[in-house]
Length: 417
Ligand code: UD1
Image (cartoon, rainbow, N blue to C red; front, side, top):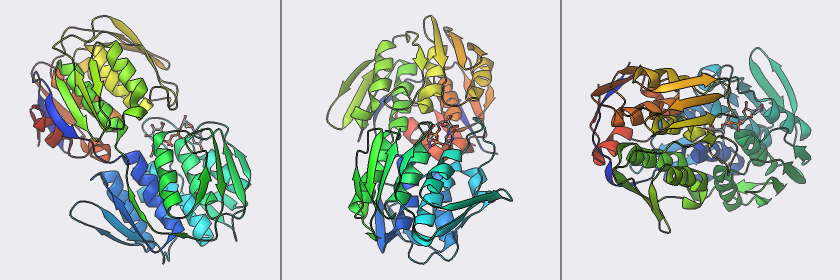
């Protein structure tokens, strides 16, 4: 198993460019299924999860090329096999995003149930209920969701909970349904808006994306098109925390500042100075120790759960005590044990972590347990005294493009071994 070794104590300083968003490109790749002809997807991040999605589509029969900029040209006109197998879904839950598009275009789909996941149960009942409300016949047996229908019918779908990929699955499916679909209590995450932008460029009629009511007028056909993926707001947030935790400064180009209000707010509260331009953000910490910040995760535009672990690391060295409440996933504090191995003083009770800031963390061998947990350990390693080995680092490659190259470009000392 690969690990990375971080020699702590080097300030982050410099400028980088944000990559394309993982959580936007995955639904967009799945959505290529509903368009006839070729789509060209640009600014695609080089990530394991993207490779997995590409492999899934290729296994189904998509023709797909990736050029030297990592832009993808894809045609899904002849999918002979509408199956997302267990082996793929178990490594990447987002494979569930193939369900809606397959039923909508091909009238059938067989997608493995995701099953357990390190950060909690994460059911897909709302994806299934939404498609059933649109007329799909769905049976769950042998660990698979078997779906079929002649043509989906538009309907009013009230999501019981705000779900990002659930909204995306229904949104994509509805673009080819007969009549109008209304998704109520829809997720308003920026990645849902980016997906809608791609679908509209394919000819879909969509209103209300970015609000909790999305209206979709179904079309008989949609056509492949060109789309540039939005920047990754979680990657941007992670680099800002890297500068804040080391007392340094960073400028991130290609930033989507309007999507980062909650994160900027908490960084300012921690003592960082933040300046934005139209498409860049600069954070300066001026060598200060962070102030503790209380956080409660919730759907957009509140504080994102995907930034929670990184703020645990920041609070771990803050000048005082903070509380972090995780409201979305039940088991998303696995990084805490590892941070404590580095000298942090964090105590978890239920869905809340109480963090008593310590002056210094010290390097230690630690193990990554999921994607964002691994990011928090790298951040802690940057601030710690001595060397930190982060084991099972493969998690980080699912969601961060060239993390050590980018960090090293900013003055960090990280090697993979
Ligand atoms: C997406 C993101 C993930 C992020 C999460 C929350 C992608 C590929 N992943 O995951 O990075 O952490 O949003 O912002 O975009 N739920 C149900 N039934 C369902 C679906 C969800 O009960 O059918 C629950 C989940 O267990 C969870 C909550 O709804 O408690 C929100 O989950 P959801 O928004 O669906 O997360 P994902 O779309 O899987």
